[in-house]
Length: 121
Image 1 (cartoon, rainbow, N blue to C red):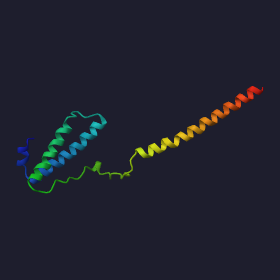
Image 2: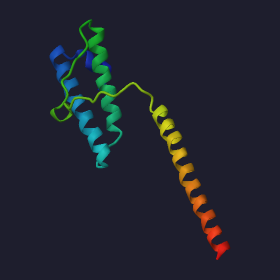
Image 3: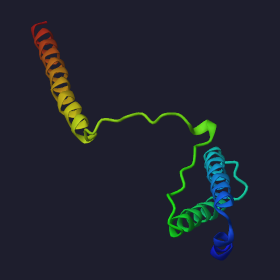
Image 4: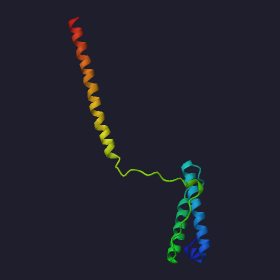
């Protein structure tokens, strides 16, 4: 739909269209993840239309549209720590190196002991 047609819509119609588009985007994202989307390019069109709806609402001087998420997407986001993932991984690698060195030294000690036994015998 062209922007001129969006501007002709009333506030209620604009809100309704925006709600429908947000649900459509949710469903399309779900279909894309499952690999069953019939028209994958439709998600881009729906996003642009939703952005147009938000823009028209903002141009009119009203508050931005706030839409409730579809019932399936209401799960609360999990909070994540602000600690970078690279530091713990680096520590894990550093901790693994001494363990490998200890195993290697035990193996070398075992080989040396085996050589001594065969040399005596």
